[in-house]
Image (cartoon, rainbow, N blue to C red; front, top):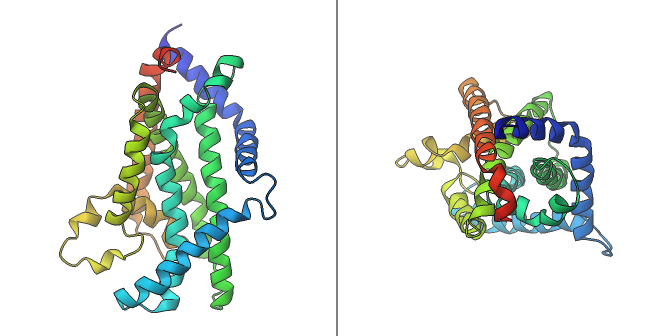
Amino acid sequence: MSSLSVSLQDLGGSIARAPLAAWLAMDDVHGRYRRTVLGPLWITIGQAAMVAGFAIVFSGLFGADPRTYLIYLAVGFPVWTLLSQFLSDMPTAFVSAKGVIESYELPWLMHIWRRAFGYVLTFLHHLLILFVVMVALNIAPSAQMLLAVPALAIVLIAGVGVGMLVAVVGARYRDLQPAMGVSAGFLMLMSPVVWRADQLPINQWIVQFNPFYYYLEILRAPLLQQEVAPEIWLGTSIGAVTLFCIGFAAFVIGRRRLYHWL
């Protein structure tokens, strides 16, 4: 069979086993906090501490309303964490699963979905911060927030595409994972996570040519009960499909060599 046929079978098999990947992702998250009292809630506590710290310090530096800035961060940090994990953690997806790959005949791409579902689960944990802040500030939810569901689907498709690409390259070049970890910190500073896009009247190119901004916006805006421009919906959707195709093409090319690289 050709590499393309084998890869298509792998993709179909991984999608069919998505429930298994989701269950394994939940077990991964639970396993990190086994024998702790609060369990996975430590994820939320850590993110909440970061949000509170940034809100206290930077609301004064930026001259922002503390209430508005707090909820902006309560959404921005979880969304950024979700996006950055596809870059900083996915390069080791195949390498870390070497034992499973060698022991069980499971679709290789299931390991990509497994990690992706884990990132989404962590994101949902972080959203608890948003709802706590909304209750504290007496902000009522609206139907606008439901648009976060299709936005999350778009982010997931784009992230899996990026994940396939960096997982294949990361299996061949082990320096990719630490390089992506370093890059994630730089990209956060260059993206409107802590600051707002309208605070850059001069260097607007930092936002306009930053793809992270658009994926941040498509998921963050609905949760802030704000509208997303139609061109952002269209652009991120096309970008997600394109990234998925690029990632799958990288998997097709590298699949036969992955055994040797691991």
